[in-house]
Length: 210
Image (cartoon, one colour):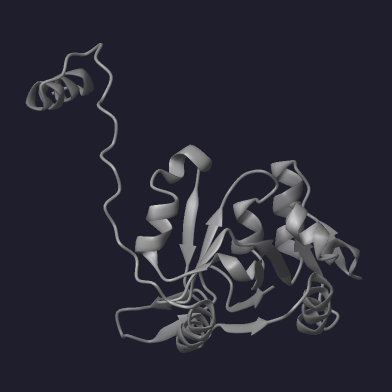
């Protein structure tokens, strides 16, 4: 059975014709819990630490820059070309280069540095996860290829969890070609149940809440 026959059967089952547009998505009916910001920050830090990541809260962009400098400790890094990192002065740090736009050049840079620095659209308190959106200077490779990942997220964007995320962003594909949830360092277990970090992604994850 070819593709058109399969799609025809699906349309028929849904009561639609080939030229008919799909109906709009139903309204979101999620009810995220109301949790004070300070409690969300506490839960996020605890959940992230539980999966092997580390976090810190700072009170200004300048303090975020200082914290990133301490974490790098002389290591070379590539930073996403986004306004939030510009605001924090990340691109002015010694050893930090701005991510190039060309894919081939970006791959080369990311494979040579020791850390990738990105922003995060949101953070989820219940699982310690980062919500990363590709596009607009935020390339996925920066958070995936270097052995360490440092992410900066605005304090007010620490959400309770997935329910609140999908209440704010019910159709992520409208905003980005890729939304990725990252929960701590990369972890891989083989058939002998031996857990190894850093095989399919960064072995170190640091989150700075600004």
